[in-house]
Image (cartoon, rainbow over all chains, first blue to last red; front, side, top):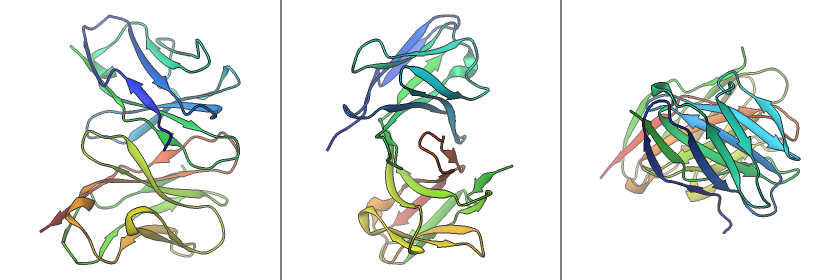
Length: 113
Length: 114
């Protein structure tokens, strides 16, 4: 069964450092998403991406965050200068056109020290 | 504000007994409702959805959920729980449209005891 894959599974970084989280969506999907889940809290929407541009972003997704689809397969989330409160599990998801269900990756756990 | 609520942080049930994980929604229009499950150190896995049609929807692993418009609920159920069902369960909704974001409940931790 097709999967969304995310790397790294866990990254530890120092506050102020840049982090790039990588995702490979399902190959024929055209809609891409990033969500995050701070430990013990609800899953929160960050951003959606379609046709090489951001479709929607939440208030969490400020200037420190960016997304990119650098080639035909990867979808990345960059945090320019990490803060302690960015520590969370970050989930990538993708969706086919007309579909109602998002397929999620296993997540990337980010720990900011 | 539009939202989904999962009133129980934790549900405990004995193996073999029926289980219910509750979800209520407060949204305008006709919501698309979903249940996802998160096993330890795993991602969010889709279980089932309600879009339209029959109020009782069946999903993966023997789970089902009933859309109840009058009670604005979408409770997840299974007739006979397994220890392997122990996980974190999330209810979510989104509005109609091709690129609408999912709005999530807080999650309910299900523990099935042998």
